[in-house]
Length: 438
Image 1: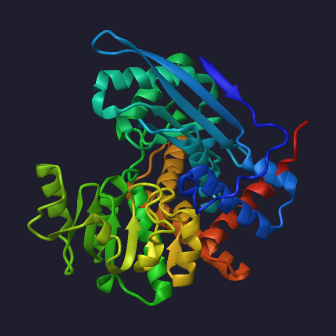
Image 2: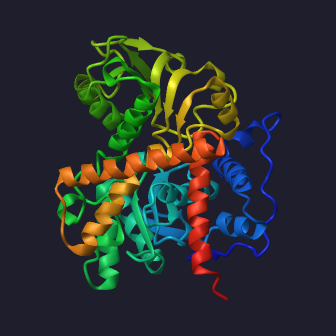
Image 3: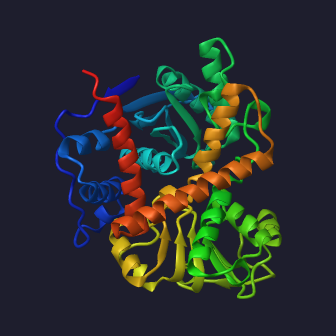
C-alpha cells in the first residue's frame, strides 16, 4: 500500500520554535531545519513564492510492509521515502532502520540532503528514507524480507535518474545489495546505479567507507590553516565511534592529530597525550565497549563533551549540543560529523563564544560526494582507483569549504548561515533557470 501526499498549494507559516515551556520544539529536526532555512532565505531576500517552492518536498511516500517473521507470524512495518528536491538532479539520500524513525525526521533529513548536495555542488537533489523497526531483534532473513518488500513498493519512485538511496543508520552495503538486486529483478536487467554504498564487487566505489570521516578531516585541516594551528598540536575530542567517528579517529590519528578522548553511548575514554586508536578499536571489538581501555582512563560521557580541546567532532546523533549546554563547550573548532548535532537555539551561543563551526551540510558531505562518484562510475562502467577517489574528494571538499567561508565573510554571517545561503542560492537559481512547468 502506498500513500502519496502532495504539498498544499499554500503552505502555512513556518512554526515558531519555542525554548521555554516547549523545549521539545528545540529537538524537532524539521522545525530546526525550517528555522535555519528561514534565516538564510530572509538574508538572501527570496520572495515568498520561491520560499514555498524550496520548502516544499516534491513527494512524500508512506509504505506499509507486510512481512512474515521467522516464527511464522505476520507483521506490518511502516516505511517512508521523502524526495525533497529534484531541481539540480536525481534525489539522493540514505535509508535508516530504527524504532524511532518519524516522518518529521525523514522530511528534515531529506531537506538537509538537498542543501548538502548544493553546498558541494554535486548534481543531486535531496531525499531520505526510513523503516520503523528494531534491527537488533530481527534476524538477517527478516531484515532482507523487509528490505526487498520496501524496495518493491518504491520501485516506480527510485532509480538512477529518479532517486538514488544509500546506507544510513542500521543499514549497510548488504542492505544496498538487496535493494539493487530487487530493483534489478523488477527492471529485468542489472541496474547497479540504483543505489550507492554497495559492495565493491557489485559496483561499489573504493574509498566509500572512509569518505565521510576523510571529508571531516579535510575540512578540519582547512579550519586549522585559517586559525594558524597545526595537526601535531591539535587536540581532538570525538563523540561517537561508529563509521563516521571511528573512521575520522583512525584517519586523523594516522595523520598526526592527537585524539585525546572518544565518547560513546556507554562512557568515554580519555588520554591527554593521545589515544592509540587502532588499539582502542581492537579493545572495543574484543570487549564490546571502549570503557576500561588500558591506554586511557574512563570518564563521564557528559563531562567529556566539555573538555578543553581544539576540535570537537560530534559524530553520533542529533541534538547533542543544545541551548542548555552550548555555553559549556571549550573548543576552538566544532566539526559536525553527524546530521543535526546542534540545535537551532545553540547556534547564537556558539557564535557568541567565537567557536569556528563547520556545519553538518558541509562537514559530513564526504559521504554523498563519494556516493556521487560511485553513481558516475556505475553509469560509465569504468571504476577509479582509491587515490583518484580521494584526490577528487579533497578537491570538492576544499572548494566547498572555501565557498562557504567566502560567503560568510561576504555577507557577515556565521558559517552555518552561509552554508544554507549558498545552498538555497544554488537551488533557487536552478529553479529559476528551469522555470515552473504548468
